[in-house]
Amino acid sequence: MEEEKKKNKDNIKEAPEGYYSNRPRLGYQGQSRFRRELGKCMTYFIVVAAGITFYFALLRLTDISGVFAKAVDVLKPFLYGALIAFLLNPIVRQVDVTLIPVLEKRARNREKAEKLSRTVGIALAIVIMIAIITGLFNMLIPELYQSIRSLVFTLPSQINGLMDQLNEIVRDDSNIGVMLRTFVEEATETFENWLKSNFFQQANDIMTILTTGVIDFVGEIFNALIGIIVSIYILYSKEMFGKQGKKITYAVLNARHANIVLHVMQKANEIFGGFLIGKIIDSAIIGLLCFFGLTLLNMPYTLLVSVIVGVTNVIPFFGPYIGAIPSAVLILLADPIKGVYFLVFILVLQQLDGNFIGPKILGSSTGLSSFWVIFAILLGGGMFGFIGMLLGVPSFAVIYYIVQMVVNGRLHKKNLPEATEFYDEFSFVDDSGKYMISRETLQRKQREAEEEKEGEGTSGNDTI
Image (cartoon, rainbow, N blue to C red; front, side, top):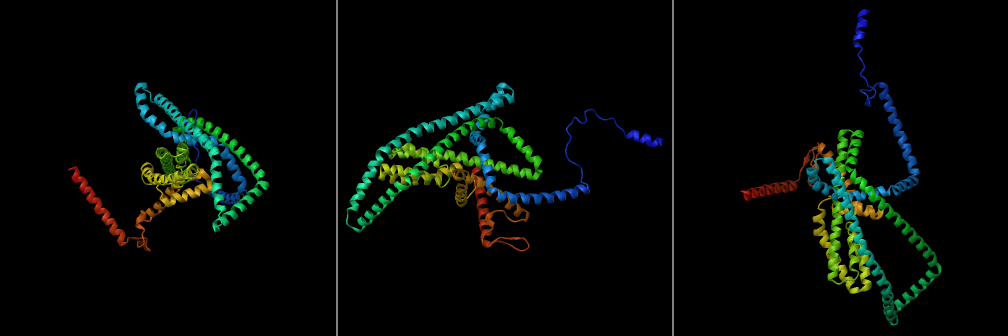
C-alpha cells in the first residue's frame, strides 16, 4: 500500500504556470470507433442535405441570381478598385525595384525605405492614370462636339442630295424607276403610320432609357472614384493580402492541393497581367498609328476615329471591326470616297497589328489557338457583354491551362507522352497501355534531334 502511494506521488508533477493562457491547438491524435461511425453518418447527412439544397436552389435560381447581381452592384467600388490596382501594380512594382535600394542606403532602415517607396510609387501611378484619362477626355470631348455639330449641319444637305438623286431615278420610266417609285411610296406610307401610332410612345421610351443611362453613368463614375481610393489601400497592403491568402490556402487544403491552387493562381496572374497590359499597350500603338495615317490621308474626324479604333482594339479579334464600322459610317457621310480609303487603311492596319505588332507585344501570353480565342470571345460576349468579350480570352486561357494540367498529369501516371504531336493518325496505345509511335512521328523526331545536334555543333564552332 505504501509502495503504491509512493508510485502515485512520483507520477504527480508540478503544473507550469499560465498553461491555459496559451492558445491550444485544435485536433486529435486518433479516432475512436464512435467518431468514425459518426463521421460516416455526417457524410451521408451532408450529401443528402446538399442534394436537397441544390434542388431548391434550382427552383429559386432567379432569386439567387438577383441576390448575386445585387451583391455585385454593392461591391462595384471594390471591383473597380481591384481592377485599377491590378493595372497600376506594374508601375508601383517598378518604382519599388528602382527606389528601395537607393532609399535603403540613405535611411539604413528597409521598412521605412519600403513605405516611402510604396508611397512614391502609388502617387506616381495615380498621377499617370489621371493624366492619361484627362488627356483622352480633353482630346475626345471637343472632337466629339465638333463631329456632332458638323453632322447636324451637313446631314440634312446630304439627305436632300440623296433624295434628289432618288427623285431623278424615280422619274425614269424604266423597270428600276418603277420599282424604286413603289419602294419610296411604301416606305413613306410606313413612316407616316409609324409617326402616327408609335412615335410618341417610343420617344417616351427613348427618353426614359436616356435618363436611366445618364443616372447609371453618373453612378459608375462615382463607383470608379471610390474604386481609386480602394485601389490605394490595396496597393499599400498587397503583400499582406497575398500572405493571408496563402495562409488560408494551406490551412484549408493539404500541402499538395494547396501548392496546386497557389500555382494556378500565380499562372492566372501571369496570364491576366500579360494579356491586359499587353493589349492596352498594343491598342495605344494602334491608335497612334491610326491618327498619323488618317492625318496623312487628310481624313475627317481624325482624332475621334483614332480614339474609337484604339479603344475597341482592346477586344481581341472582333475589336477592330467593331470600331471600324461606326468610324467608316462617319467618314462615308462626309466623303464617300474617303470612306472607302479608310476601310482599306483599317484593313492594312489590322493586318500589321495581327501579324507583327500584336505577336511582338503579347507573345504567347494566353497559349490559345485562334479557334479557342474566337470561341472564348463569343462565349464571354454572349454571357457577359463587353466585359465578357474583354476578359473571356484570359479567363478561358486559365481554364484551358487547368484542363491541360489535369490531362498531362493523368498521362504522366500512365507513362504516356504528354505532347499533343505524339497522338497523330497512326500512333496508338495498345491494350496493355504501351504507347506505339507511328513511323512518320518517329522520323520527324529523329530529324528534329539531328537538326538540334547540328545547331549545337555550329554554335560551338562559332564560339571556338
